Image (cartoon, rainbow, N blue to C red):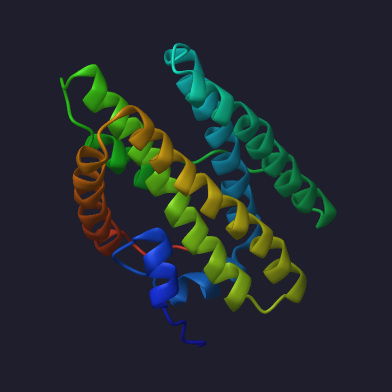
Length: 205
């Protein structure tokens, strides 16, 4: 089994406190139909979540301007993964319950102010994009199939940009110190969450 190194470079970019278990890549490669299906739905949900954020915050001009093209990009990713499934003679499976995302949603501040709720929405998206980027990096470096390594390299590069966008938007509307303090709390929570979750190859998160 190939041992992966969680570089300081990746840590500095993403801020994630716990690396993905190296076994995950091997498991994902053995369950390709499932991982592609789950990836497709992740891209679909990213697009619809951005649409929802625009609908809920129409007065935030910069957010509307910045997230509008992300909707198109994420939907393009969904279509690309769907095409990859079809090319391999595979079909899009059923959408699964996303335990990772549901657990993140539980960490949101309940009954907070509109500003606190907005901040958590931005940081959840940043965290999902950061973890997706880290996972795609793993796939782009660890899969045996050279074509799939290149395929996931493109997704890794895209998700890294999305992660920084959500942080930037949060800091545009909210004091930077407040954003950074809450982001640190999210990173600590996500570390414990990742540590508690079963290593499975049939899902991106």
